[in-house]
Length: 287
Image (cartoon, rainbow, N blue to C red; front, side, top):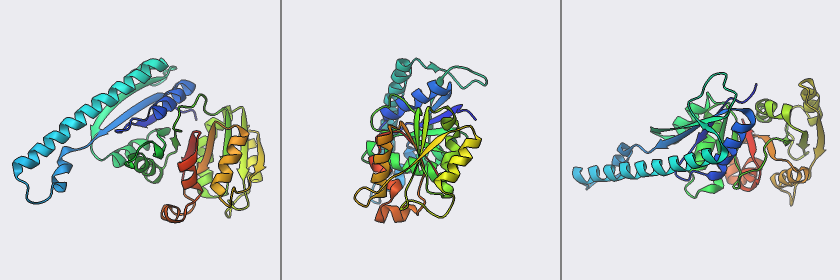
């Protein structure tokens, strides 16, 4: 199934790399980009104000929050307009049957993670910036909301806008349900890729089908993939995976997210965490 709708959450950091990646993908697939900015609800400030503040003081805090949110929304909208113009993408609502890339911008008020995850359920792909792009964790929160609460794939844009996406695709395979879901989401990309490589490692494999079984499955879809194993780098499987991905010259990495629990990876580290912290190419994740 081709990609027709791309969700692009734009928060305070308004990652230009994510904008560029989403518009590049829209051009490749003649898809529509729904750029969504979620404004802070000024009423959420009141419970944080604490005791000892008068009603007038709380009202002023809420008004200041509303003004700041409005100015931030205008700035983000201006960045969106500039990028759309630079990429030659038409600004319009999505139209069934359209054969050209398009995009539109919308602002809503609420809780960003909740609203983005809900919207992602009816998008073919959600594009988010690298969690390293901001210091307040908002990008990471949105990424994990989509991964854990949408049932859909997410593409993490690198810190620098990519020139190409999906010509040479590397698949990190470990036999898990998460990696199988990522491959399923990536089928449209794999079918149009110039070359596909399956990357596996004894230290990465879990119980489940081997990489050779995946290659046989992809062949049924008309996808020829070569196989390669990779060693850990300094006993780090994630570092070994990224090294093998770079050696292949991939411009897209496909992988399942959090085969182990997220808490375990936050405490002990893991492949997903390493890739999120160090990848320098677009990464398509699912779980």
